[in-house]
Image 1 (cartoon, rainbow, N blue to C red):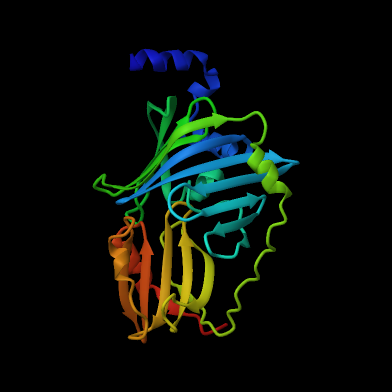
Image 2 (image 1 turned 120 degrees about the vertical axis):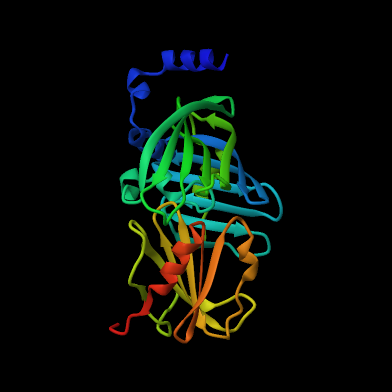
Length: 312
């Protein structure tokens, strides 16, 4: 029956869709995520944490509008109007930042050009499977080096929207999974998005002042990784200042914290939370913590490559 179903799907799909390369499937997925109007009900699984989410996307008066809602626990929503994202949480004032997507759902590269991560991955077509009642094409991301984990995504064969995403260890253990349980393609933007576009959201917050921070840099990063954010602040629950550096290859995100040795409490609970790897080492008089869903050896090497840029 499954083979008959997939054969019927292949009959109604354009020949061009049947003959797409793995990279072309990803390019179509990126286009769909940015241009299509839809509503997704999603289950996000990380280790022993399960989060049900709803994601809406559409175009309102030429603007790209998106909304992400966490269905369990205290209110936690995010609204994106083009390149501005506003976060709305229980008992917290809403705030807005500059961002071209809402964090916490699909990896950034899914909505961007896949050519941006070819330095780190090869794209390989897999089989086809039925997800949320819809046939999907599997595309595997095979790492080019041992510094990142493999992943795979199933792309809807009709709309090209992602239906399922899995991040795996080299031993095929599941680190993270996002799976669509219902997908509705809309002809018009959802009413909630229309209302969101009319709202007067808080202005974009100013970038944090880093005049008292130090400019830490890296003498080595895995191919395709780059620094995307820096910050100097105090850890929650502590008065000790730390330097924060965010690194990504478009899929794997790594956070590096630098504090004075012996003065910054190490967040040991992250060792087993949400499948994150954590490495803590001393670099001179600093204590450094690196956190991310990459091999521990990669985190350790990144820490050892940390250096203070004294030229700035």
